[in-house]
Image 1: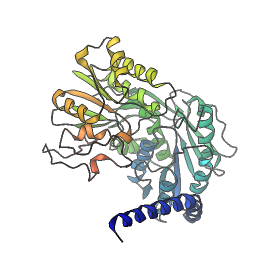
Image 2: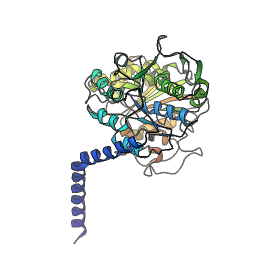
Image 3: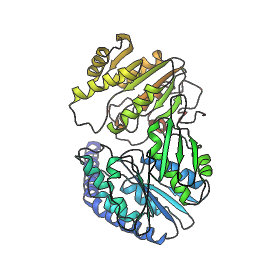
Image 4: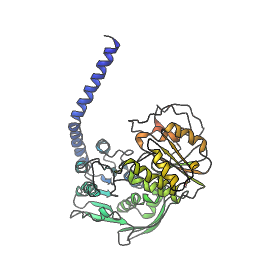
Amino acid sequence: MNSALKNTLKQRLKKLLWAAYLVMQPWLRIAMLTVATIWRRLMFRTTFIVVTGSVGKTTAKEAIATVLSAHFPTHKSRGSQNHYDGLLKTILRVRPWHRYVVIEIGVERPGQMKWLAWAARPDIAVWINVAGTHTLSFKTLQDTAKEKSQLIHALHTGALAVLNADNPYIAAFIPPIGIRTIHYGEKQEFDWCVSQPTSAWPERLSFHVQSNEEAATIHTQLVGKHWVPSLLPALIIAREAGLSLAQSAVALASLPPFEQRLSPATCPQGATFLRDEWNGSLATVDAAFEVMREAKVNRRIVVFSGVYDSTTDHRRRYRRFGLQIARVADAAVFIGDNNAHSVKAAIESGMLANQVYGFYNLQDAARHLRTELRQGDLVLLRGLHIEHFSRLYLALFREVSCWLERCPKKTFCDDCSQLSGASLASPSLTQISNQPL
């Protein structure tokens, strides 16, 4: 048998196996869901805390786990694994000695939350927000709110719901009878009230919080005031666990920004990057721009490609971003096939031609950044994870040989063996999220 025939047969076999997997996948998920559900019921001494929301779930999960793990044996979801596989693996890793487990749940289409919540059977449910994500599946915010609310409906009698009442869709939600609820937000009448949030770079986020029993000023390592709704549940749940607000504040101060969610990192040129290249949702872009607007630095640079979940046509969409970025930055780099619309809008809004650059690919943009950046710059790196925008930052440290326009991998480029190239600088490759307060 010649090599060409072998390769043909091998390719056909791969296609057959993939087709068989696709056919069997629903049944495999049902089987795994059943196993995880049984295991969850056996872990009756462990308190299951489940977090949902359109954005900010991972940071909320990390904050809760950080505070609880400082005092109790605690298990949590890994990274941003929040769908079927991530949920089931997290449940099956729980052991009887874990006092708490913190899980985040995300959904992609209607009907999924009911089954995922049924498997997790939360003792405490946290609902952070409702925003416009997965817009192909959820046509309206009401549709999104209805799906997310299934987590609260899955609570058993006497369980606790922690709700961000600043969000109008959550505020309008009526929990089932028999469920304890704690509302938090900016209004004084809420059970937990937050006020005076500040986060003007290089300062990190701090805010004042008050409950019926205690009050304190919380200092964090996070960047941006928009993280407050993700952090309050950690303080609330810690209080339910018997910890004081002072104890929670100490633990929360140790929480670093999650990777590539506005996580600060330095580069050899002396510039500081706010790496925000993982979650490209439209629902998070305004918060990133607000951070840049408030920053107290000599020069603010936005490196931008696009967003998910936008329903407007591409010309209007990219013109809007050009106008927005012109108001919050001193220089801009737009990347992608539609960069010309953003460049034109930014110039029309008042930016000079030598302050705005457009590139069709990442490699050309990386060359520009290598010569353009200087000491004291603050750079917002904002792209889509399928574009693996991280290579723009990593190319400042080493020669990058992989410049694929689209990559199916769902891992960080920082850890990818195919990135290749020898180091160009002595600092560690990523330097992610570890700048001191």
